[in-house]
Image 1: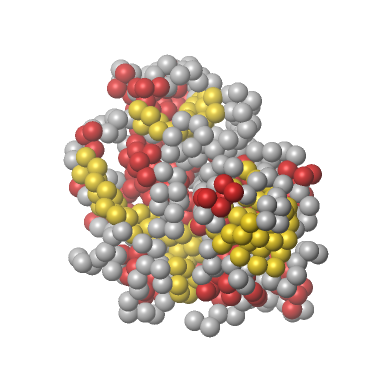
Image 2: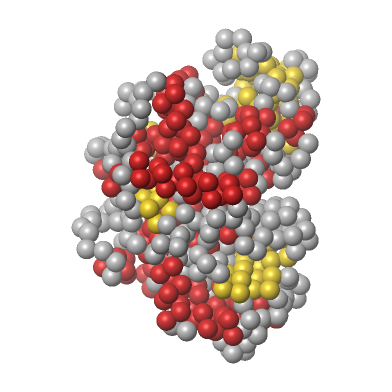
Amino acid sequence: MNDRSNGKSIRGKVHKYDRDNIDTDVIIPGPYLKIHDHKELAKHAMEGIDPSFPEKVSQGDFLVAGSNFGCGSSREHAPIALSQAGIKAILAQSFARIFYRNAVDGGYLLPIEIDKSTVNKISNGDELEIDISKNEITNITKKEHYFMRPFPELIAKIVEAGGLINYRPDI
Amino acid sequence: MTITEKILARASGKQKLSPGDVMFAKVDRVMLHDVSGPGVIKVFSEWEKKRGLKLNQIWDPDRVWVTEDHFVPSADRISAENITSLSNFTKQYGINKHFKYGLGQYGICHTLSHEEAMVLPGEVYVGGDSHTNTTGAIGAFAAGLGHTDIAYVLMNGRIWFKVPETMLFKIDGIKPDHIMAKDIILKIIGDIGTDGANYKAMQFVGSIIKDLPMEERLTLTNMTTEAGAKNGIIEPDETTYAYLGERTDAKYFPVHSDLDAQYSEVYTYEIEKLEPTVAKPFSPGNISAARELQGTELDKAYIGSCTGAKLEDLRAAAQILKDKKVKIRTEVLPAAQSIYMKALKEGLINIFMQAGALVGPPTCGACCGAHMGVLGKDEVCISTTNRNFPGRMGHVESKTYLASPIVVAASAVTGKITDPRDVRI
């Protein structure tokens, strides 16, 4: 948990990449798949799109993007690199399935689904506060409020447990 | 229920399941490799550190199998260390099915899964790789997972799934010689988009599927991943049973869709209308007919990977390359040792080498930009692989066109993107 978290609400600055289909090969390119040191992976987060990304991000920041975020490979290196670079949540119109479950089951970061119109309203550099208990997003910079799609029941429980390994299933 | 729903229902001990239901499924088979394996090992050691106790055994070592494929033969010191830690891991937990390079049969995980009959019809199979979907062609539920999920399966023997809706793809007609399964799946991804099947199952039926050899069916399911699908699946039939019969004596319990199964969408394709198809940079969904790209200059041709270096793929490429010379750098990397040996026996390797192509060892290699022929800045490649995202095969400013083995072979002969009908065999 980052320093700016307050109960269930988290606060951070937006890094917006306004495009669909941001794939795992640009999030963490293939040659780095042999690396398993999380801090080393963070140095190459988003290298295929923006090599300066790791320098721009502060601990607890958010990434905003379009649809099908994280499509492609099952490499868990992708959510690890982003989370180690400082990203606490990704707000996107939709997520590729393996990226989504890796983010949640590994307990790395929150994949938050928002409408396309919400993606459009958020700008690069905006300060957001996200309250996942209320499914509410506040844009502090623009003084606007948005809704996030609620987590399905099981996902909410795994998020609460901090990842699948710590989760005790009751079904 | 569909075949996917029925397999998941059995695995979760439920009489009936519907799309959207969330459940924990008992896993029959699990696979990890030299990229996902070290991640699993890390999760294990963190789990031990946190709880202060040793994880002495895993759920069922006989249901686990391990491959070395992405960075082998070891590309460098780090890859070599990953291979060593994988070997230590399988030894520690008594996992006997570890396919080691340079030690008999080895190859790409999604090829060994069928070549060695590691997964059987009706089973739930998960692997630490997105193209695990491939193995659904034998009538199993096969889905890719990350390494935390794989570690969880190794500890508990089960994993959560949301039951997917099933999209049905009906492929009918009479298959022309210049069309391969690769053209069909590229056309489908072009039509539905790279997120067109997100979270869903893609099931293939129809007269063409019935006539397709096993390995060609595997090309279809392999690339369901590129449409975002949770799994790709084909109901088992005589072709499946004959293929498995040559490889295993193991008993299995085939599952088929009910007659009243519900599909979220039904797509119909008449195969005569299909053109040899190419996916342009930088998306498998960015398709054109090969003829529309005729004349596009190339630097390299790559025949490799789980998608495009099975025996049928090599046969198809060799048919074009026989008594010809390649005009651009051409690499052929059979997907498994056993396939390499069969290709050798059939004279295919001789054809490739006479044509001037390089023949390399089984490996994921340059398909994922790992090693053995990665692309430099501005290099343009035509490839039988499954992805062409920016930087996928090397430099972020290189370009990859995806196509069937015959389109790639025809293009290797001319040095430009070429429809196989335009090269005289």
